[in-house]
Every structure is written in C-alpha cells, then in structure tokens.
Amino acid sequence: MRAAKPLVAALGTLTLGGCVLLYDYDTYELGATGGANGCGDAAPGPSTVELCTNDVDDDCDGTQCDNVATWNRRFGDSTYEQTVTGVAMATDGSVLVAGHYKGTIEIEPTKDVSSNLASNQTDAFIAKILPSGEGAWIRDLAGTLDRQVFGVAVDGMNAALVTGYIDEGAGATQKDAFVRRWFAQGAEDWTWKHMGGGDDLGLALAVGPNDAVFVAGKISGSGQILCGMESPTYTDLADALFVAKLNGGLCVWGYVFPGGVHHPTAITVDAIGNPVVTGRFSGALGTMNSQGEVAFVMSLNGVDGTPVWGKTFGDINNPVYPQAIHGGFGKMLVTGSFRGAANLGAETLGSDDGTEDTFVIALEELNGTPAWAKRFGGKLVQKGTGITVDPAGSIFVAGITEGAMSPEPSSTEGVLGNSHSMFLLALDGDGNPRWGDVFGAEEALAPRSAHVAWGPLGVALAAGWSTSIDFGNGPLAGASLALDIVVAKFPPL
Image (cartoon, rainbow, N blue to C red; front, top):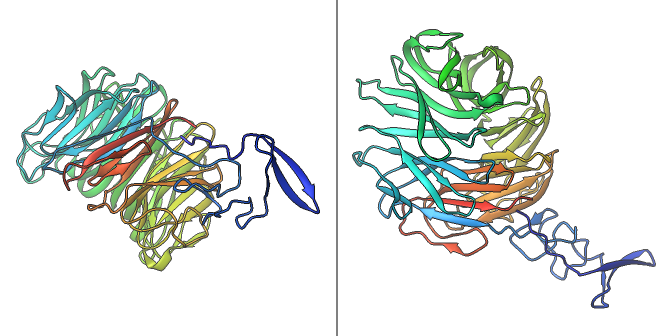
C-alpha cells in the first residue's frame, strides 16, 4: 500500500563540525540534514507525519508515501443513489462490498441487479470483485418491499455474509432482522431471520473462531428469539440491543438487553472468541447506566452471551459517536467522531472549534482498560467510519472530512483534504500516525461513510461517491450527481 520512493540511490554519512551530512555515492552530491523540516528538503513539508499528497519526505525516513491502487472500480446508476455500508476482504484477495441501491448496478456485462421496488423504497446488494478487479458476481435480496443491508463479513471458506432487515409487509411493524450467507461462487446457502412483534434490525456482523457468526441489532415490541441454547423472550421493548450467535444458519444463543434505548453500530470478535459491540445508549445496558445518551463498548461471553465488561464514553454535552470497531490482536480499537471535551477513556480530548473530530481509542481486550486515545481534527467535520489492523499491528483508519484535517493528534492545522474528501490514516500499534492520505475533493454530496478492510493480499477501501475521485492511477469520473459505489484495492504493506 505504501510504495517507497528512495530519495537517493546510495547514501553514506559524514560528520563535520557536529553537522551530519548525507553523501550520495551515485551523484557525488552533499545534502545537509539540518533543513527546515530536519532532513534537508528544499521545500519542507507542513507536517512531521508523512503526507501522501506531496513530494516531500515529511517524516525524514528516506522514503515518500505513494499510495497507488492495484485496481479501482466505480459502478452505479446514472439516476439513482447507491450507498456503501460495508467492505470485507477474503483470504484469496477478493473484495466483498455491500449496501443499498435503486435502479440498476452492473459490475460486468451480464452481471447486474435491477431493483423492482417503488422509487421511495430501497433495495440491498452484495457484490464480489476478484483479485484482478473483475466483477465475479452481484446479488440482491428477493422481495417486493423495502430491504436494507448494514453489515458485511467473510468467513474462513471465503463465503459472504450480510445482515440488515427485510420489510415483510405485515402491518405497521413489519421489519425482520436477517443474516444471509452465499458460497464463494455466489450461490445462496442459508438465511436466518428473527420475526418478532415489532421492527427488528440487524445492524452489524462479525465472524469468530470456527466460522461462528455474531449479529448485533435492535428489536422492538414483544417476541422471542428462537435459539437452541437460549431463547429469550421480551415484552414491550423499544430499540433494545440484541446479540445472537449463529452456527451454520442456526441460532446457538440470543441475548436481549431491556431497560434502555440502544443504537449499536458495530461488532467485532476478540482473540478468544468473545463478541464486542459498540454504539450509543441511554438508560440501562448490561451493568452500565446513563440518564442521557452516551457511547459504549461492551464485551460478551462467546459461549452464552452474558456480559463480560462494559465501558462508557462522553456525556450529553460532549457526545461521542462510535462507528467502527476491530479486535483480535490484544487491543480493542474503536473509531468514530466526538464533539466538545469528551472523556475517551485514556484521557479527555477536545475537538476543534466545537465541531466533530475523529477519534481512535484502544482498550485492553481482557477487561476494557483504556490503553490510549488519539484525536485527528481540523476545520469543520472529520469522522472516522472504518478501522482495520494487520497482524503486524499497523492500524488503518478510514473516514470523511468536510475540510482540511491534520494527521497529527496534537495539531489543529489542516494539511490533508478538501471539501468532503475521503481520508485514510496509518497508525502504529500505539496510535502514533505513520502517514495520511486523502482521495477526492469538492464532493457535491457528502459520502455517508468510508469503509476499510485488510486481507493477506492487500487493503480495500469503499464508499459512496458522486464526483471524480483518484486512487493514484487515474480519476474515476462520475456519471451523475447521484452517489455511486467506488471500490479500490491497494497492495499489502
């Protein structure tokens, strides 16, 4: 993903009067390292973090950041809007992207889906793109009423899974949460559905050890989640969190949390197979209580769904909005946005000019103890909406910025991005930024989110986008001002 551009072909060092010089054996030129940015560049960069948007060695490590996608794709409908809600990468390098759409989506000739719904309704799709960038297949959800997808994942067999809701048209309360699995070749395998007495939404999805599937969402009304080990009943709920564990399309256990109003946004699985959920809530949630809406991260026992630990962040006047979570490497990583002077666990951080800034926090997986918290801001709004990590501990954060942002946690001076750009930050395991990049500028319609996924063969980035966007190998022009689906795959680090 980060291609190294050597600044000199071969270097020696020479110390003269306390000044370290670089000696270029090929060109026999000397360049002092004591320049304005500390490494002798003629035009010093505006940041001590490597910026992938200039030709300066900002961090003085002898290389320049050059993120060029292996391939990038754009598809959508010239009239209607498409929304990306998630991306996942399989072990073979294939990319799965899912979201909502209207009209027609064609990923290759003869490989398309067309919605049969009314213009005020939304259909859902999942598409698979091969490692070469060629579209493999695309599927939508059968039905005659509104359906949406909010989460996507891939299991150990490279099969695709999504969660969301299907409108069953059974009265005023008619939405049913579901999880559906497709084989790697695109054939449908199984569907699990929860058909309660109210609106039930599947909002987040994760795959754990032995391809166990964990789904988080919210339910309303009265009903029962039918599971083999545990089939909890519930009465007169309104937007209550539920989490279920599935195996082969059958529910192993389900857990419902009464006593509050809950809005889960993401779920992951830790190193020992426990699901961990994040979002916002008010009232009661497990062992946590709040009189107003605050952010939460909660770990559940993977065997039976009982709470292990829970942490809250922010308050009514200083809100925190978690959007994505990733675990499995000893730390639980969460990103999103916050406003004001918000308690983010390890410390209280302040946003710039009272607008929303991006945060990244790390918690110990075992007990939720805060490890560190970082802020990335600038003028206007910056939102972290996707996060992933590779086995070496490199953290990648994706999101959107409405103005120039800073990749340095302590700075408010914007040096990356423009109006409604997509950003990608690389951090080390302690949250220290390594480099920052942005894609697109002057986006007419603000993308709702950008999503990122890591796989052994690279990193994938996906979002909804309307104007031209360049991932390093030429602009992808938009056919209209409606949001299209854009996907880019970068080589591994």
